[in-house]
Length: 212
Ligand SMILES: Nc1ncnc2c1ncn2[C@@H]1O[C@H](COP(=O)(O)OP(=O)(O)OP(=O)(O)O)[C@@H](O)[C@H]1O
Ligand SMILES: [Mg+2]
Image 1 (cartoon, rainbow, N blue to C red):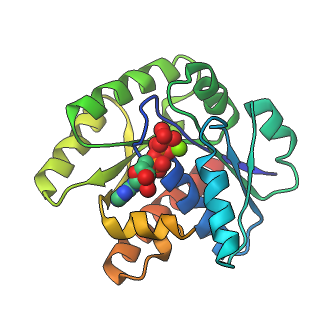
Image 2: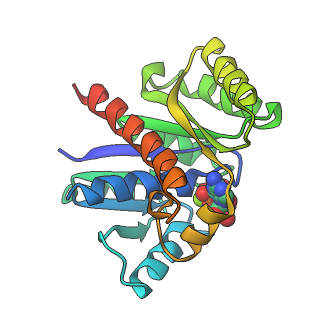
Protein backbone atom coordinates (compact mmCIF):
# COMPACT_ATOMS: atom_id res chain seq x y z
CA UNK A 1 0.00 0.00 0.00
CA UNK A 2 1.19 3.49 -0.82
CA UNK A 3 0.98 5.95 2.04
CA UNK A 4 -0.33 9.32 0.95
CA UNK A 5 0.37 12.58 2.79
CA UNK A 6 -1.00 15.94 1.68
CA UNK A 7 0.49 19.33 2.53
CA UNK A 8 -2.03 22.09 1.86
CA UNK A 9 -3.08 25.65 2.64
CA UNK A 10 -5.07 28.28 0.82
CA UNK A 11 -2.43 30.87 1.68
CA UNK A 12 0.74 31.18 -0.34
CA UNK A 13 4.23 30.97 1.06
CA UNK A 14 3.42 29.39 4.43
CA UNK A 15 5.84 26.48 3.96
CA UNK A 16 3.90 23.76 2.13
CA UNK A 17 6.70 22.85 -0.27
CA UNK A 18 9.28 23.11 2.52
CA UNK A 19 7.35 20.66 4.72
CA UNK A 20 6.55 18.35 1.78
CA UNK A 21 10.27 18.10 1.00
CA UNK A 22 11.14 17.56 4.65
CA UNK A 23 8.71 14.63 4.95
CA UNK A 24 9.89 13.12 1.67
CA UNK A 25 13.55 13.44 2.66
CA UNK A 26 13.14 11.79 6.06
CA UNK A 27 11.31 8.77 4.62
CA UNK A 28 13.78 8.53 1.73
CA UNK A 29 16.64 8.53 4.25
CA UNK A 30 14.97 5.49 5.86
CA UNK A 31 15.13 3.80 2.42
CA UNK A 32 11.50 4.23 1.49
CA UNK A 33 10.70 4.78 -2.17
CA UNK A 34 9.28 8.27 -2.11
CA UNK A 35 7.71 10.60 -4.62
CA UNK A 36 6.64 14.20 -4.26
CA UNK A 37 3.67 15.01 -6.47
CA UNK A 38 4.11 18.71 -7.24
CA UNK A 39 0.55 19.91 -7.75
CA UNK A 40 1.55 23.53 -8.15
CA UNK A 41 2.20 23.42 -11.88
CA UNK A 42 2.25 27.20 -12.25
CA UNK A 43 5.27 27.45 -9.91
CA UNK A 44 6.75 23.91 -9.93
CA UNK A 45 8.65 24.81 -6.76
CA UNK A 46 9.44 21.25 -5.69
CA UNK A 47 10.19 20.16 -9.25
CA UNK A 48 12.78 22.95 -9.57
CA UNK A 49 14.18 22.06 -6.14
CA UNK A 50 14.67 18.47 -7.32
CA UNK A 51 16.69 19.76 -10.30
CA UNK A 52 18.98 21.65 -7.89
CA UNK A 53 19.22 18.53 -5.72
CA UNK A 54 20.31 16.47 -8.71
CA UNK A 55 22.75 19.14 -9.94
CA UNK A 56 24.43 18.93 -6.53
CA UNK A 57 24.28 15.09 -6.57
CA UNK A 58 22.50 14.98 -3.23
CA UNK A 59 21.40 11.71 -1.64
CA UNK A 60 18.98 10.19 -0.86
CA UNK A 61 17.23 10.23 -4.18
CA UNK A 62 13.74 11.76 -4.02
CA UNK A 63 11.52 11.54 -7.08
CA UNK A 64 9.51 14.67 -7.86
CA UNK A 65 7.00 15.05 -10.68
CA UNK A 66 4.57 17.82 -11.54
CA UNK A 67 0.95 16.77 -11.97
CA UNK A 68 -1.95 18.83 -13.23
CA UNK A 69 -4.50 16.95 -11.09
CA UNK A 70 -4.60 14.77 -7.98
CA UNK A 71 -6.10 11.87 -9.93
CA UNK A 72 -3.15 11.92 -12.34
CA UNK A 73 -0.76 11.86 -9.40
CA UNK A 74 -2.61 8.92 -7.85
CA UNK A 75 -2.27 6.91 -11.07
CA UNK A 76 1.49 7.04 -10.53
CA UNK A 77 1.42 6.37 -6.77
CA UNK A 78 1.34 2.54 -6.72
CA UNK A 79 5.03 1.96 -7.28
CA UNK A 80 6.04 4.12 -4.31
CA UNK A 81 5.96 3.43 -0.57
CA UNK A 82 5.03 7.05 0.08
CA UNK A 83 3.68 9.87 -2.02
CA UNK A 84 3.70 13.41 -0.66
CA UNK A 85 1.21 15.70 -2.37
CA UNK A 86 2.54 19.26 -2.39
CA UNK A 87 -0.54 21.42 -2.87
CA UNK A 88 -1.01 24.71 -4.69
CA UNK A 89 -2.30 27.82 -2.87
CA UNK A 90 -5.68 29.35 -3.74
CA UNK A 91 -7.02 26.07 -5.07
CA UNK A 92 -10.01 24.88 -3.04
CA UNK A 93 -10.88 22.17 -5.54
CA UNK A 94 -7.33 20.78 -5.59
CA UNK A 95 -7.10 21.02 -1.79
CA UNK A 96 -10.35 19.06 -1.37
CA UNK A 97 -9.13 16.37 -3.74
CA UNK A 98 -5.87 16.07 -1.82
CA UNK A 99 -7.81 15.92 1.47
CA UNK A 100 -10.01 13.06 0.24
CA UNK A 101 -7.12 11.06 -1.21
CA UNK A 102 -4.60 11.20 1.63
CA UNK A 103 -4.14 9.39 4.94
CA UNK A 104 -2.84 12.51 6.66
CA UNK A 105 -3.25 16.16 5.80
CA UNK A 106 -0.67 18.64 7.07
CA UNK A 107 -1.67 22.31 7.19
CA UNK A 108 1.41 24.50 7.64
CA UNK A 109 0.62 27.87 9.17
CA UNK A 110 2.31 30.97 10.51
CA UNK A 111 1.53 32.33 13.97
CA UNK A 112 -0.32 35.56 13.22
CA UNK A 113 -4.08 35.76 13.27
CA UNK A 114 -3.80 36.77 9.62
CA UNK A 115 -2.43 33.27 8.99
CA UNK A 116 -4.30 31.30 11.64
CA UNK A 117 -7.83 32.46 10.87
CA UNK A 118 -7.91 31.38 7.21
CA UNK A 119 -6.13 28.14 8.13
CA UNK A 120 -8.83 27.27 10.66
CA UNK A 121 -11.55 28.25 8.17
CA UNK A 122 -10.00 25.89 5.65
CA UNK A 123 -9.96 23.07 8.22
CA UNK A 124 -13.63 23.75 9.00
CA UNK A 125 -14.43 23.43 5.30
CA UNK A 126 -12.44 20.22 5.03
CA UNK A 127 -14.15 18.46 7.94
CA UNK A 128 -17.35 18.51 5.94
CA UNK A 129 -15.59 15.93 3.76
CA UNK A 130 -12.91 14.19 5.85
CA UNK A 131 -12.56 13.19 9.52
CA UNK A 132 -10.91 15.89 11.63
CA UNK A 133 -8.27 13.50 13.00
CA UNK A 134 -6.81 13.35 9.49
CA UNK A 135 -5.86 17.03 9.83
CA UNK A 136 -2.82 18.29 11.70
CA UNK A 137 -1.39 21.79 11.74
CA UNK A 138 2.35 22.46 11.60
CA UNK A 139 3.70 25.75 12.90
CA UNK A 140 6.10 27.20 10.34
CA UNK A 141 8.28 30.28 9.95
CA UNK A 142 7.92 30.98 13.66
CA UNK A 143 9.80 33.61 15.64
CA UNK A 144 11.81 33.21 18.84
CA UNK A 145 9.01 33.99 21.30
CA UNK A 146 7.87 30.78 22.98
CA UNK A 147 4.64 32.38 24.24
CA UNK A 148 3.62 33.38 20.71
CA UNK A 149 4.14 29.80 19.56
CA UNK A 150 2.11 28.39 22.44
CA UNK A 151 -0.70 30.91 21.92
CA UNK A 152 -0.97 29.89 18.27
CA UNK A 153 -0.96 26.23 19.27
CA UNK A 154 -3.76 26.70 21.78
CA UNK A 155 -5.77 28.77 19.24
CA UNK A 156 -5.65 25.76 16.91
CA UNK A 157 -6.47 23.27 19.70
CA UNK A 158 -9.43 25.38 20.84
CA UNK A 159 -10.74 25.32 17.27
CA UNK A 160 -10.75 21.51 17.56
CA UNK A 161 -7.61 20.49 15.67
CA UNK A 162 -4.32 18.85 16.53
CA UNK A 163 -0.87 20.28 15.96
CA UNK A 164 2.40 18.54 15.21
CA UNK A 165 4.70 19.01 18.21
CA UNK A 166 7.69 21.26 17.52
CA UNK A 167 7.89 24.15 15.08
CA UNK A 168 10.02 25.42 12.21
CA UNK A 169 11.66 28.79 12.83
CA UNK A 170 12.15 31.37 10.08
CA UNK A 171 15.87 31.16 9.32
CA UNK A 172 18.15 32.22 6.47
CA UNK A 173 19.97 28.90 6.77
CA UNK A 174 16.80 26.99 5.80
CA UNK A 175 16.35 29.21 2.75
CA UNK A 176 19.97 28.77 1.72
CA UNK A 177 19.70 25.02 2.19
CA UNK A 178 16.56 24.88 -0.01
CA UNK A 179 18.37 26.97 -2.63
CA UNK A 180 20.98 24.20 -2.87
CA UNK A 181 18.42 21.41 -3.15
CA UNK A 182 18.59 20.34 0.49
CA UNK A 183 15.63 19.57 2.70
CA UNK A 184 15.54 21.65 5.89
CA UNK A 185 16.69 18.61 7.89
CA UNK A 186 19.89 18.72 5.82
CA UNK A 187 21.10 22.14 7.05
CA UNK A 188 24.57 22.19 8.53
CA UNK A 189 23.56 23.88 11.84
CA UNK A 190 22.85 21.09 14.34
CA UNK A 191 20.17 22.98 16.32
CA UNK A 192 18.23 23.86 13.15
CA UNK A 193 18.65 20.33 11.85
CA UNK A 194 17.26 18.98 15.13
CA UNK A 195 14.21 21.25 14.98
CA UNK A 196 13.40 20.13 11.46
CA UNK A 197 14.01 16.48 12.37
CA UNK A 198 11.78 16.77 15.42
CA UNK A 199 8.87 18.07 13.34
CA UNK A 200 9.47 15.37 10.72
CA UNK A 201 9.57 12.64 13.37
CA UNK A 202 6.32 13.85 14.89
CA UNK A 203 4.67 13.80 11.46
CA UNK A 204 6.00 10.26 10.92
CA UNK A 205 4.63 9.18 14.34
CA UNK A 206 1.25 10.72 13.56
CA UNK A 207 1.17 8.97 10.21
CA UNK A 208 2.00 5.58 11.68
CA UNK A 209 -0.83 6.01 14.23
CA UNK A 210 -3.14 7.02 11.38
CA UNK A 211 -2.44 3.79 9.53
CA UNK A 212 -2.78 1.55 12.60
N1 LIG B 1 11.39 28.26 8.00
C1 LIG B 1 11.77 29.01 6.99
N2 LIG B 1 12.79 29.90 7.11
C2 LIG B 1 13.17 30.66 6.06
N3 LIG B 1 12.61 30.62 4.87
C3 LIG B 1 11.58 29.77 4.69
C4 LIG B 1 11.12 28.92 5.72
N4 LIG B 1 10.08 28.18 5.24
C5 LIG B 1 9.91 28.56 3.97
N5 LIG B 1 10.82 29.49 3.62
C6 LIG B 1 10.94 30.16 2.35
O1 LIG B 1 9.72 30.86 2.11
C7 LIG B 1 9.30 30.69 0.76
C8 LIG B 1 7.95 29.98 0.76
O2 LIG B 1 8.12 28.67 1.28
P1 LIG B 1 7.42 27.43 0.57
O3 LIG B 1 7.73 27.45 -0.89
O4 LIG B 1 7.77 26.20 1.34
O5 LIG B 1 5.91 27.82 0.83
P2 LIG B 1 4.61 27.33 0.06
O6 LIG B 1 3.50 27.35 1.04
O7 LIG B 1 4.88 26.03 -0.64
O8 LIG B 1 4.44 28.48 -1.02
P3 LIG B 1 3.39 28.49 -2.25
O9 LIG B 1 2.05 28.77 -1.64
O10 LIG B 1 3.89 29.59 -3.12
O11 LIG B 1 3.44 27.12 -2.87
C9 LIG B 1 10.41 29.94 0.06
O12 LIG B 1 11.29 30.88 -0.49
C10 LIG B 1 11.09 29.20 1.19
O13 LIG B 1 12.44 28.93 0.91
MG1 LIG C 1 4.63 25.49 -2.67
